[in-house]
Image (tube, rainbow, N blue to C red; front, side, top):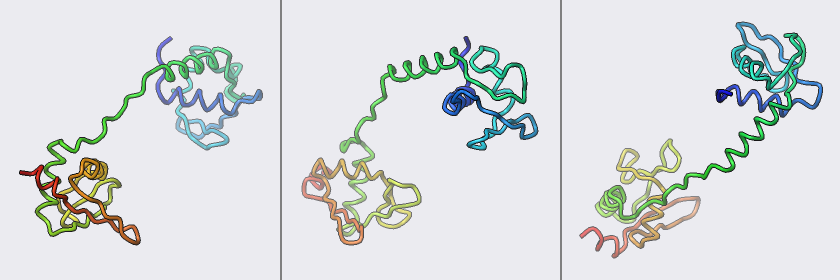
Length: 174
């Protein structure tokens, strides 16, 4: 069998979740789309085709009848879940306080009057130094630099944060 598209797999999972024996009655929503009765999500008619073609769902040949998941559909979902569980997760590397980005951020912090107040921008997890448009880096990288002993993070009242370079950080820049 061909691999299902992500949308077809999502539709199959939705039918499996909602089918308690009576099936799921999709309503025609115009322009070749069908609306799910519980979530009101709209699915294109073409998304149903591979599910019918491979015998994963059945409506008895009647477009107005409820759509029921077949044993083959349940078996396919079990196989997809088992394959996803067996696939190893990609682990993210922790931020490196010795990276070029960390050293650039350390130079910027050292050049500013101490302590430096980082500005949180519109993107969560990014800090700018010196001004709202100043040099920026990720919050995680700053915490990695603190763990390495290059900076000290001072948490003040009302969620305020200040960053101060340490002697070890100044020595690292030389």
